[in-house]
Image (cartoon, rainbow, N blue to C red; front, side, top):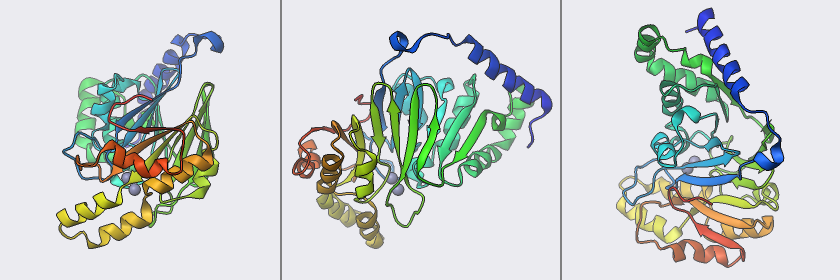
Length: 313
Ligand SMILES: [Zn+2]
Ligand SMILES: [Zn+2]
C-alpha cells in the first residue's frame, strides 16, 4: 500500500524533529565507547534448550544500536540487553538463512509499535526490501487497523532497505564506517561479513562462512573479531540424534569453520580479541568452553572469548 501524503508528512516531520532535538556537540569529549553485546550465540534455526538464543549481535556506537542479524528472539534479547525497541536505527543481515533473518520483520514491527521516532535503515543481501514488504503484507489486517484506528504511520514509510550486492563500503556516518566482505557459505552466494570502524574500536562480524582467507585480510588489525565456530565431535553426536540429517553434515562441513581454522583467521588478521559465537551445535551443553577454544588456541595466541548470550565485550 502506498502511504498517503499525510502519512509521509507525518513521518518526515517526526524524523526532522527528532534530529533537531539531538544535541550538536563536539565529538571528542562526548563520544560513548563502542560496545559489543552478543544477543544470541546458538548457530542454526532450531530453538535450543541449553540457554543460547539464535544468532544476533548488537554493536552500540556512541549509544546508537546497530543490530547484526535477527534470528528468532532478537527483539526480546535487545530488551534484555537494555535497548528499548523504539531505539532501533540500523539493522544488518549477513545472509538470508532463517537463523539470521527470521525476526527481521518482527523487529521492524516491534520498533514501529513501540513508536520509533526515526526511520530504520536496513542493509543486507538482495531480498531485503521484499522481506520487509512481505512481512508488513503478512500483517496487513493488523497494520491497516492500527493505522486507521490508532492513527499510526505506515510502517513501510519508516523502513529504508538497502541491498548489499558486492563487497566494499556499505555506509558511513559521523560515528562509523561499515564495510562488507563476501565470505564463503555455499550454496548461498551472497553471504557477507561486516566490519565496523568506529573512532575508538574496530569490530568484525564474520557471519556464516567456511574457512575464508579473504576474511583475515578484511579483519586485519581489528580490535574484536566475532567469528562463527563448529565443533566436529559435537556435529557427529548431533547427526546421531537427528532424523533425516544425512546431508546436514555435508552442508555443515562445506559452509562453517572448525576451531583450528578460526584460530588461523584470527592469527592471520592479528586481531586483539577473538570472540567465538554462532556455536554449531549450540545446544549441546556437554561441550565445554575449553573444548570450544582448544583448537583455536593452537594457532591464535591473543585473547579468546567463548561467547555467551548477553555477554559484553
Ligand atoms: Zn547461521
Ligand atoms: Zn547460514
